[in-house]
Image (tube, rainbow, N blue to C red; front, top):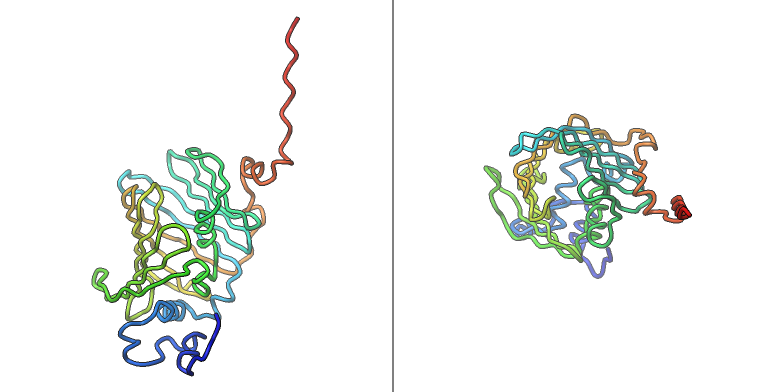
Length: 263
């Protein structure tokens, strides 16, 4: 961020030294950066976020409409990540990042290397410091105003990426926490995610329950453990054979020669 002819209060705000520094008018209509600053502070502070090196989450999910249960496990460290969603009767839905390359693998859609806006969105979810440099993902953002989310009063902020669909977040006015988000969902169409049960997870605070309403009906994810900065076995980042072949086609075994026709 470039600072040009900025006053003391504006500079302090841009540097994240104050969440709501400035006039009463700014408090009545805070900028997206001010709202994000408060969220970062509420969840542990910028220094805590900067210190995040790895993340391991393990939890359970329920697809309410289908009465289906499953598990959700995610590993993130540096340029590597893997998310494993296992659903009863459907098998595993895998996605991840290998040396910075985004991929997806499941029985329904096969093995895919992600590109463009799809890869950018996937990479964002594995970025442990994403809200310290949110402008990287959303070059445009706008505070729409105050709006109720259940019984909470919240600031509504629309974040627009360079490509792809916008994401709308609601931040609790009092606590600063992100309580609801609407953006592209699995299975097509938008999905509404409500974040609940914020608790300490090592150096930061995180929601332990995510309730999602989308094309597949209500889905609830409950995290049993959320760990930051713990050692992760490199084997947890191994990719399926199909993904490995797509990433390095030269190393794929050559096809066997066709058998000579019988005389």
